[in-house]
Amino acid sequence: MIGTLRLVFTTILIVVWILVLIPFHLIGVKIGGRAAGMFTPLWHRLVIRLLGIRVNVVGRPADARPLLLLSNHTSWLDIIVLASVAPVSFIAKKEVASWPVFSWLAKLQRSIFVDRERRQATGESASEVAKRLEAGDIIVLFAEGTSSDGNRVLPFRSALVGAAQQAISTAGTATVQPVALVYTRWQGIPIGRQHRPHIAWYGGADLVPHLNRIMREGAIDVHVIFGPARRLGAGDNRKVITAEAGAWVRRVAAEVNAGRDPADLSVGPVAPDAPAGA
Image 1 (tube, rainbow, N blue to C red):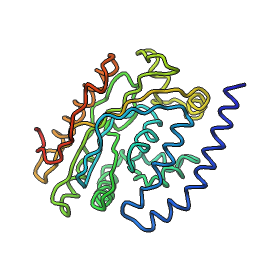
Image 2 (cartoon, rainbow, N blue to C red):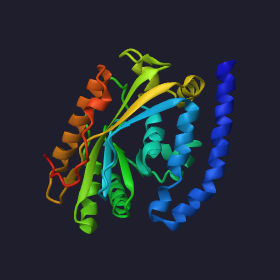
Image 3 (cartoon, rainbow, N blue to C red):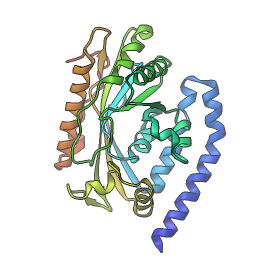
């Protein structure tokens, strides 16, 4: 009974909050620049609070622009977690554009939809990403290409990192920064290897039952850890840079999952001027 009441109450408040902020968001998008992403973090912060998710942040996004964030991907929760921390937009698979309700929310977030199965379409999407990067947007790429069970980080894919190199034509340089998302507690209890898949949404899992469980139960702790930023030059090897970012995220996620305090992993000030491979 309590879970059902929580579900209904949370759903109503989320819908009302969306309706309140939409006019301001649309005005911001019309104005452009920083105003375009000003209100979405406010919406996501309330959703995070309503769902009972506690977000712990180590580090911060680099100040340099263009900025492409490379993150691991465990669940749809990753989107609202990252969007509550910074005014970001996401690169999403094309299927999301056809999902009821979620497609509408993704478009409000100004997501860029990508058909990863068609090489030509990926190239077209890279051009769109480059335009948004040039405009100063912070773009998040879930570089694994899919979500995982939370116990491991899959190899990062480099195809769309080329979009940051395209943005160099205007900005002169671009910045790539890894981000590790690690879910550590549920209902106040440390999440073990066998329980992480309950929070993860991956494979052929149905979205609605997973969403229903999270909204009913909540009380999740997640760590967002920003890694060292790297300058991406026109002549740099995007595969090497992507692999470096993936290796950093993989190491950090493994250490936090093993019980290490994320605060001990702070990278200090971000380094937008550090060359690739530093």
